[in-house]
Each structure stands twice: as structure tokens, then as C-alpha cells.
Image (tube, rainbow, N blue to C red; front, side, top):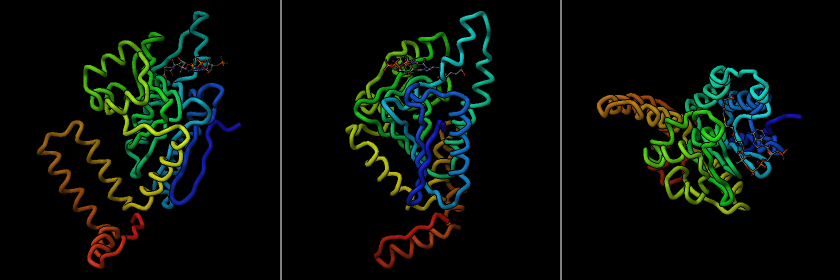
Length: 261
Ligand code: T3D
């Protein structure tokens, strides 16, 4: 049974984590299938946006803890190796993907599952969804970029509170704090997230990829370095077909038909 479902339509690849009986917790298969799906979406020129979601009542409950039962019998697990092999490449792939990645958080997002959502470019959540930095509840520390994304999105005070307590945040609270973009009624989540992804798939894809690159670099760059980067990226964007189309459409007072090139 595949652990991930993939649908392609109108320039959007929808990737659904599909182990609902485990709240889509990550086992080896789900990691490998998600990595392959993201790689294919990145390499396929016809795909211009990605939508990530989960099936059933959960988005993703992080690492599948039944794969870690050995520690209860005196064994050990090299969790660092698991982070190196799976979680870090996952975050890097999403952040470096030169196409927008929308996340529709359909239910509970816990541990690495919560931070997987935060790694995406635009995050919508169902009203019934929640976010739990579950790591300290089981004697671990955050991973999947949590200590990078949380303070930047919601500030140090709230990041510390969530990471140190492992308390649950409702979708509404998450939107109010700026952890995610917005909350949508459960029965409208996929329609709204799908429409957003389809609009993004009609946008000038190269520009969006360059915008992502600049935003990620701004986390560590000085203003001077960022100004130089913006100059370089602007030069690169203007070499694209979509820049010509954007200018022509404006001057001809019509909608632009971007190709992503
Ligand atoms: O090891 C490494 O590689 C290091 C990396 C670690 C990354 C991490 O993500 S560490 C954090 C791991 N995740 C968690 O600690 C969360 C564990 N889950 C929960 O705390 C709760 O399930 C939730 C708060 C997410 C949801 O609670 P609730 O009451 O809505 O659902 P439930 O009844 O607990 O779960 C439903 C089923 O899903 C249940 O199975 P059952 O009893 O019906 O057969 C439960 O065992 C299963 N499930 C939920 N989360 C996981 C899981 N099974 C395996 N692993 C899970 N993470």
C-alpha cells in the first residue's frame, strides 16, 4: 500500500500523506515516497505548484514512534542519523524548490509533522486542525527546522513556550499568532487550498522561485547583502520569457499568460 497519494492536474501536484490510521506519522516508506514525489514535482516542468496535505483526521503526527519501540527494551536509536537521512533533506527540498509549496493542514500536526507544515511557503489550516511541538513530551528536542521557523514566525516568547511545554495550539490561535496564513472551515479547506495552488501555477514560476530564494537568504543576510542579492535576482528574473509577457500584457491591457519560463 503506498504511503503517499499523488494527483496531477492543471499544473499542480497534490501530495497526500496517506497513513491515516497512524495520523500520517512518518515511517521509512512515507519518507521515501514523499521525497520521490517532491523530487518529481521539482523536475517536471509541467508542474508549477505543489499542494501538500494529509488524509483522514490528521495532517502528520511526526515520526512513527512504533518504529522506536526498541528503546523500551534497552536498545538505542540514532535519531541524528534519521534526521540527517530524512527530515533535514525534506526541509531543504521544500525550501529550495523553485516552485511554490502550499500546505493544507487538515488535522493535527505534531512533532516533525508540525514543522513540515511550517517549512512550506503558504500554510492554510482547517478550523479543527492543531499544532503540537510534541518533542519535549517524549524527551526529544525540536527538529525539521522548528528552532528556525518558530522564532521567526511568532517571536521568541511564543516559540519558547511552545517548544518547552509541548502545548497544543489551535488553528485559530496559530493564525492569530502568524504561525500560518489563515484558518478555513474544514469542508472548504481543500477547495480553497487547491484554488490558491492553481493560481500560483499560473504565475511566473521563475519569479516565484527567485522570490523564495531571496526570502530564505534574508534570514541570515545583512541589509547590504540582501540589496545586492535583490539586484542579482532582479537581473535574472528580467531574462525570463515571463517578464516580456508581463510587460506586454500590461501595455496591451490584458491578462498575462505566463508559461513559467
Ligand atoms: O526518531 C527519530 O527519527 C527522530 C525524529 C523525531 C521527529 C518527531 O516527530 S518526534 C515526535 C513524534 N510525534 C509525537 O510524539 C506525537 C505522538 N502522537 C500524539 O501525541 C497524539 O497521537 C496526537 C496528539 C498527535 C493526536 O492525539 P489523538 O488523541 O487525537 O490521537 P491518538 O489516539 O493518540 O492517535 C490515533 C492513532 O494514531 C493511534 O493509534 P491506535 O491506538 O488507534 O492504533 C496512535 O497510536 C497513532 N499515532 C499517533 N501518532 C503516532 C501514532 N503512531 C505512531 N507514531 C506516532 N507519532
